[in-house]
Image (cartoon, rainbow, N blue to C red):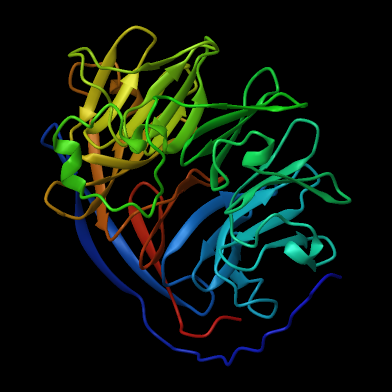
Length: 399
């Protein structure tokens, strides 16, 4: 086992009761649903910022939090990394064999064999390009790709092979990895996108602009005015997705672009206005494209754009029934809202939207095997069963 580290944490057990109080879920059609919030004290659930929520093939739910990697098996929470590492974990990937990979912000990657309850730790000493890992992806052939601060690493089960700008990457800081229908691997970076066809890289830019980085400062008010054509922000990729026609959509810090295989085109709505700071893009079960942007939630049905809210949207999620869930921020820092757009009304002129709850900095959204919606915030994780929000507040110590 590579670089296995044991860290002993002191355990502080706090006892607390269960407190219930009603809150109102606001609906745009004027009706109100009463949602009960239950606070549950547990020594395992995260009580700080949760970056990522993922469900594995067995139905377990994994939380990537400031306290470590926490697993919920349907009955209890377990911090599986508390005795292994105090690293700042950032992401989780389940590979085709059911093993888990955990990316960190400063300590490389951890490989977890759940069957053996065994960890392996990989860093630059083992061939990883950089110990700061932001994104992970398993391609169709079983290779694991890691986007780092110094290029991308490909792991074939035995060793790492690294690629940087010298090999054709648009930028060494890679934040997005996406595989299209033909098997090309796309890497979204701070200075454009790169396509890997299995043999070589090709670097592409949405617009010809000066290079910039995420450390370049800018105020949110920049989106209230047209962004200059030569701004680096147009090439700073936030998200990538392929639509049903094979066209690729790129959400950036600047304007969203479409790529038809030959050229990039700035995507505009029915009024001819571009979509700025698109943080999330998803394709729903019907093939519609949903954009979460600075100026709201938009749906493209193949011919027409429809806007559902004017608030900034950070995350978009479709549940099994086809309902659309979002985390959005009200204007003038009015707080974050978890909202549900009812699938049966999505084609109506005024679809039914229910504001479930307000929480600080809502990020991840996930549906479990029972149809419950889990969502994360800066103060922990919550579960909504359609009527009740369960608030899991963990004790200071983590087992």
